[in-house]
Image (cartoon, rainbow, N blue to C red; front, side, top):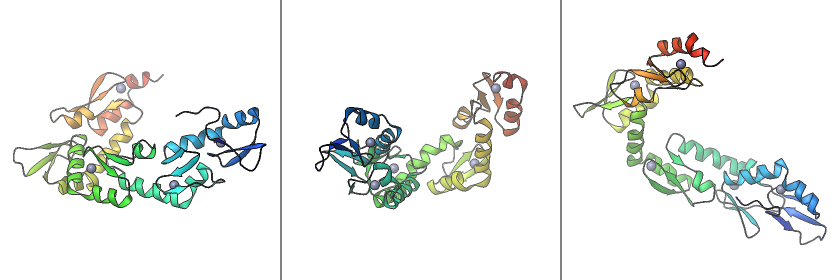
Length: 250
Ligand SMILES: [Zn+2]
Ligand SMILES: [Zn+2]
Ligand SMILES: [Zn+2]
Ligand SMILES: [Zn+2]
Ligand SMILES: [Zn+2]
């Protein structure tokens, strides 16, 4: 983003002695030193950064919030608008909707595109809550999410196409989008295995990706020690607490 000294600093129609910072919604004495001090300030920089993650653009001297379809008023700073109920509620709603759905809001919020992007369907979606909700619940999207999640969850096809095998739980599941997604999201044993594993390997550079994506791989890999460890909670915990592993951290 271009941030020249005068970016966002507008002349004040009612006064020859002050200028206005659009992003911060404040007036500043019209002296290079004051302007420079303001534009170098933390608050000012924060407001500019917030624009790019909140769908707020600055064009033709006007600050516009795309999600709220709202032109910011003169005394409304970027952060004040973002903290307001309308904007905050929209952000919460949309983040809830796309959570875990492989939908990227970034192109929309940065102002680069008018749509959001669904990575698993390789398609753009008009950024309205209803549209996104519809997309997220569509069969095609659910099926694509399912295909994406299978290798991350240790789920493999079996010879009879009616079932799939969950390596983590060592059980067979009905080979349907609904059956597989329910297992991944709601099966207690499955979910617990992942949360225990993630707690263990977090901060330890231990990878379980090969174990999950390769049917015949029995090991996790410690990138710190460059060795393989049997991929279960007990042996990973033993490894993490072993002298050889700990010595890499001293
Ligand atoms: Zn400012
Ligand atoms: Zn807004
Ligand atoms: Zn999709
Ligand atoms: Zn499972
Ligand atoms: Zn290690």
